Length: 451
Image (cartoon, rainbow, N blue to C red; front, side):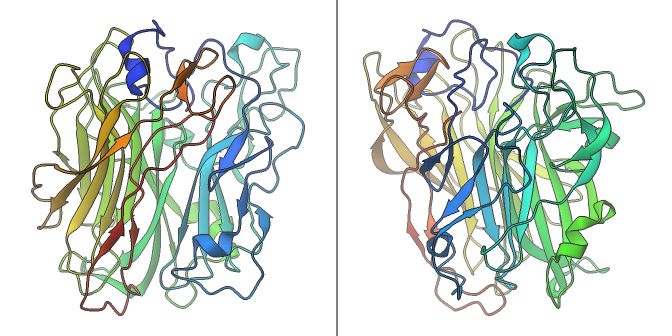
């Protein structure tokens, strides 16, 4: 999302191969940045969930009629870019199925584009962009808690903006930790560990919110991390009787401090993460949390850079994470390993197997290339991983590169940006009464939101 150095050389093969890290801040960006939820384009300022009943039908049977519900309540409708959101994520508490969380790249706390130098729009240095919203009635209505942190909401121009402490509508606790929440949300629910370290739904429900993070510019007294962007995980717990409630999420002190999950080095740009928690009690690895992400390394914009896929595993509720490289780092059009891989998704079954699905890119200098959906499994809770297995071929959809953003789009000038990534649905049983069967039903490409 925000505060990333612009890539140079828009015509190099990375663009055609679809390998640009999601959300880099290009020097010129399209003002017409419509937002997408569940693959539906809408106007900026109002992320909505169309037919949310269909999204959660596998877990919830809501009494309300399917329709369009605004999620990003509290966002202004007119001021750009405070009215902009994209790349949404949603999760349902599998035990308290009325409780939902959503996240997005949300600019509600950024300065207006009329403030200061207009070429710095739409981001404000040091201000977070990981929006968080909750529903406690199966998606019929949504609320956005107001927290305290660094904000530029009051910077409406024309004066230069200096962020101040004030109301924020994004993840709390980042500036206090010397960090900035940089969006690319990934959310999942799991059980809370007890004092003895064992997991049980009787201890409550834990929300994991993974996102990109950068070091807070000028922060004093913080060691920081190496590299450009890291993966951070925020957590908040709800009681066993109710799960998260409006009162629980309204209290900023209920959020635990963000934890850096990725193992960073000075050249690493961690990106495109997804998170999951093993939620079936029948699993020998019940309660484990997993994050997959793409690790972009080397000098950005200088051709093909090393780009392995990593998985980090937590066995203690997110306090600590162990990292494994699960693919080669090869990123070469002449290699049998292809030109990088990205857009991962991680899931578990009721017997404890961990599945990571990822798109292995191919290369074409003239148009859409035939890449491969791959599956990588762990049979021991993330301790070791099998080699990637090819599942099927998928065209990457890169028929046209939009000059204003330097990215592949699927429908011409000003079109919707596309990244192909696996999107498995699971027939996994109710988390606290796991059935004996296990199945991963499908794995299909999905379209990303427009930036």
